[in-house]
Image 1 (cartoon, rainbow, N blue to C red):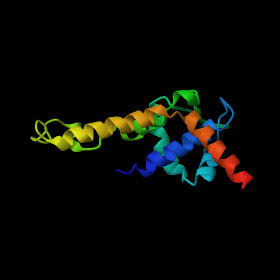
Image 2 (cartoon, helix red, strand yellow; image 1 turned 45 degrees about the horizontal axis):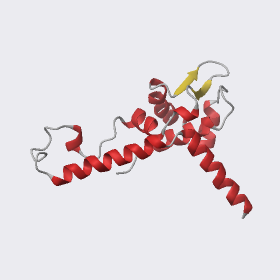
Image 3 (cartoon, helix red, strand yellow; image 1 turned 45 degrees about the vertical axis):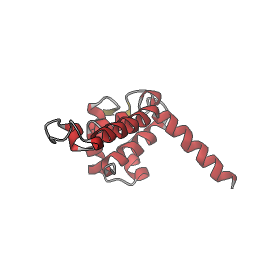
Length: 144
């Protein structure tokens, strides 16, 4: 399983917004420049973030984007779900009628366990955690 490019850019953008002063509106052009994303693609990836209440937008002169929640309250799973919907590793976990083997399929149980484990890991890390880890890595690089 590979996350979509949209989800990758959404996570990067949320991290970038979290690194800005709280309640400061960040211009779309600045996000595009720093994250290497086109304005059209940024609009596409931020729409679900706005709809889910992760990001707020302000229109007009001086408009842009900012986090709608504290970075400690936003998990990687929140972003993933806003962008891609519920985490599902296999079709049999989406629709119980997809496969007639669910009752005896041992792999089905493994898919469920793997899905739950991945969901737990993504839920465990907030954007604030990711920002802290990134800062630690950058400090370690500066020492070298």
